Amino acid sequence: MKKILFLSLVMLFFSRGVAAAQDARDMIKKSWDKFRAAKSEIEEAAIAVKYDDGRVEQKAYTRWIQFDPAGEDKVAIVFSAPANDRGLGLLTWRHKQGEDDQWLKLPSMKQVRRVSTSDQAKYFAGTDITYEDARQLIGERIDDFNYQIISVPTLSE
Image 1 (cartoon, rainbow, N blue to C red):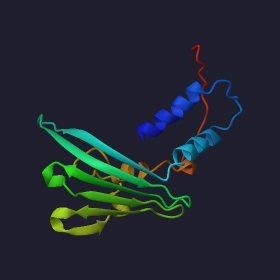
Image 2 (cartoon, one colour):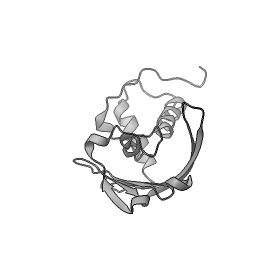
Image 3 (tube, rainbow, N blue to C red):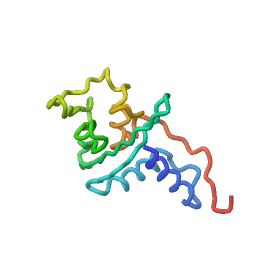
Image 4 (spheres, rainbow, N blue to C red):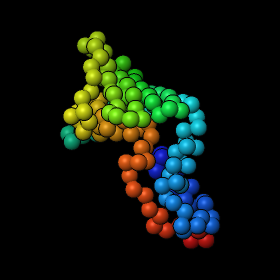
């Protein structure tokens, strides 16, 4: 999510002479259209989870995104470390219309379970990532937000 916000801000910063009347929503839509021009994306990440008692746990995961022209995007997050999280995965299937589907793979129990809508605010894999955050990692639904240009910086500022 931070990556997408950063890309949007960079576009705003370097776009000299942007007319003040330009629709902010259109700017965001164009940004997302360019971002989604790739058919897929793979990301490997390492994170440190810090606990109140001072412990730090290193985690690693791979995230795959498949962008669909019809808006039926999919993202899979699979942990590779630590050993007790290895194979833990989350599949999110975003639908253009209606509710998204999410499934959690629990390798220790050798089962897959559907993540209910009521669990969206819960944290995933002992991190600060909620199921809703994982869903948003695919990309923003621009119709869910209102956009406004509050200022357009120039290179001389």
